[in-house]
Image 1 (cartoon, rainbow, N blue to C red):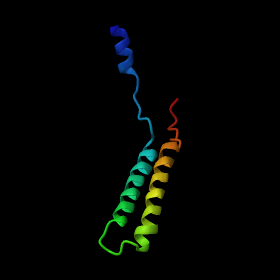
Image 2 (tube, one colour; image 1 turned 135 degrees about the horizontal axis):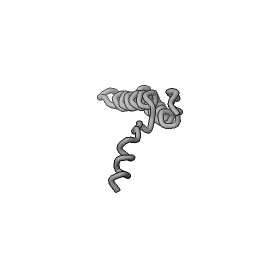
Image 3 (cartoon, rainbow, N blue to C red; image 1 turned 45 degrees about the vertical axis):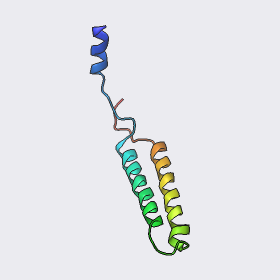
Image 4 (tube, helix red, strand yellow; image 1 turned 180 degrees about the horizontal axis):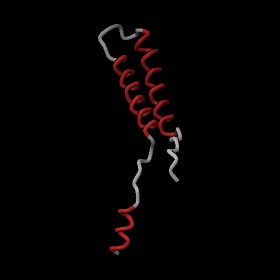
Amino acid sequence: MSLYKKKQQEQNTSLVFGKRNYQFFLLSIGVVALGFILMMGTEDIYSFTKITLAPLVVVIGFALGVVSILIKPKNSGKS
């Protein structure tokens, strides 16, 4: 059993996604947050920003999140 644990510890652990995936995911979180910030406010409730622009920005942010999951990480030359 101890030999099995040593082999597990020797294996290189890598992240599930690449750096580019995490960057896109953080960008998507920022875009969604921007969309919700655009929805806030005390202005007219039927303004263009709240009714059209903010929901569109939120949907784009969610779509970017899906893209960040589906995008293939670049190979770094390792086998």
